[in-house]
Length: 286
Ligand code: C2E
Ligand code: MG
Ligand code: MG
Ligand code: MG
Image (cartoon, rainbow, N blue to C red; front, side):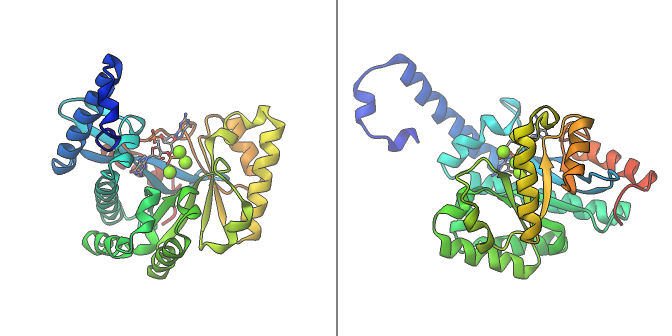
């Protein structure tokens, strides 16, 4: 964070560095304003059963619908939001809106088993407020806890293990499901996995992408699926872009998947039409 990096940085005049600092500061100010204007919204990407393409739920992915900057993707605001801790407010805004939206679909369209899977920045698991924040969001939206999933990354499991574990257990006791996102990319020591109450491993896109052309990726995926099965966890493959990869994953007993091959992340309006198509073709868990 530019402001914390010390006076020394400003002593050497460097035009490009000056520009970068200016940019970060104006971006930070814009993010702050956007939080209060509620400009962060969830987009929804379907998660399906691979064997029959039955719709099970959506991952909620943050988008910034900015007055000033237009439509902004996570890669352009999440890193700075993490550095400045503004990510906490963004995450809560996305979870709240996603829970409300999915509850509305459940009631209006009759898909009461539909779930939503939301990303949480790892440091949120270091705060003892987390379970209560989530509980209040669930109460306000009326969504059943079992229809909410929280995606965390391996970064959350590496530090402050006590409080992280306490928070995870509290969420589990409420009935919320926990997923480990981007699995396989992190600092993976497989030995820690069994210590955390995880329901699902999401296999990172880097292994899934064109797996039908990469024997070594196939071996890694198979290992992850078998490990998950042994620990009574399910697996979701993410970033499936073609039929060949979808079929291969299914053959390797990966039960669920998401990716551009099925659908890109979409607005609530588009997702609503998507759900109705799935209902019409009887391809949704009710
Ligand atoms: P992620 O949680 O691993 O989400 C999956 C990303 O892969 C999404 O990118 C999604 O659009 C993209 N994706 C899905 N299928 C495919 C595919 O077939 N091909 C390709 N090339 N990409 C695919 P997105 O939406 O840009 O989000 C990027 C990352 O930003 C997320 O990765 C997550 O780490 C972070 N993020 C997004 N929303 C939130 C949020 O609300 N809170 C937090 N803390 N992080 C978020
Ligand atoms: Mg995710
Ligand atoms: Mg992921
Ligand atoms: Mg990711």
